[in-house]
Length: 269
Image 1 (cartoon, rainbow, N blue to C red):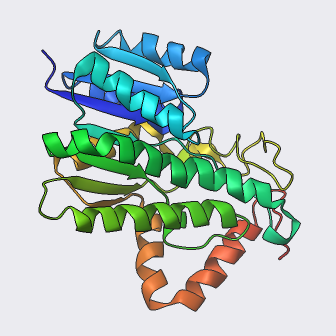
Image 2: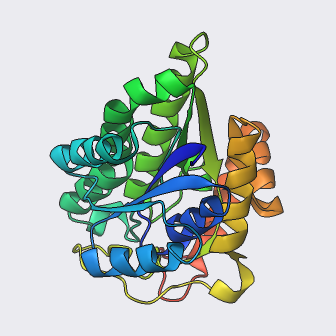
Image 3: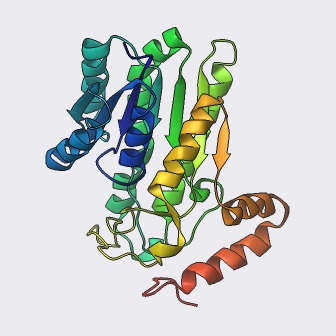
C-alpha cells in the first residue's frame, strides 16, 4: 500500500518528469499530467519500472475543466492527494514593445492560471491530508527579466498567489513550497515563445553549464519532505534574490548586461 499520492503537472519532460521518477522511488502513487499524450505515456512507462502505482492524465492546465478532471481522476483512482507539484510552464523571449500581447496571455494562462486551477480543485483533499502545494517558479519571480516580461509576470503572480495561500492556511497544516530552480537544463527554452507566438526552438544558453533536472528534482523532494516554504537553488540565484533587495538598480544593470549577451538577444545593448 502506498503512503502518499503525488500529482505532477508538466510531467512529460524536464523537471516534471524528473520529479515523478524521484518521488516514485519513495513508495508513493504518482499521477502525471501533460498535454502531449504520447510523451506522457513514455514518461509513464519509465515510472512503471520503479512502481506500478502510476496514473497518466492528459491535461492542459490552461483549461479549467482539464484541471478539474485531473483531480477527479486522481481521487477516483487513489482516494487522496498528499502533494501537488504545479510544474507545467512555458517561457517566452521577446521585447514587450515587439511582442503580440497574446503571447503574454498564453504564458499567464499556463504558468499562473494553471497553478490556480489545479490548486483550487486539489485543495479540499490536500487540507484533509495536511499536504503540500508546490509551485515551481523561477528567479524571474523575484527579479523582472528583460525580454521575459510575460514569464516574469506569471512567476511573480504565482508566487504572490502561493504566499497568500500559505498565510490563509497557517492554522490548517497545509504546507506551501515555492521552488525556484534557477537556469536548469530542460526543454523550456526550446519551447519558449518568440514575439509572434512561435516556438523559439533553440536554447540561447549553454545547457551543459546548468543544473540537471534530476538535481532539481532531488532538491524539491527534500524540500517537500522537510516542509520548507521556499527553495532557491544555485549560488547565482541566491545572490541575485538577496542583492535585488539591497541594490535594485545594480541588479537591473547586471541582469540587462547578462541577458543582452545571449545569442540573438532581442535586447539591444
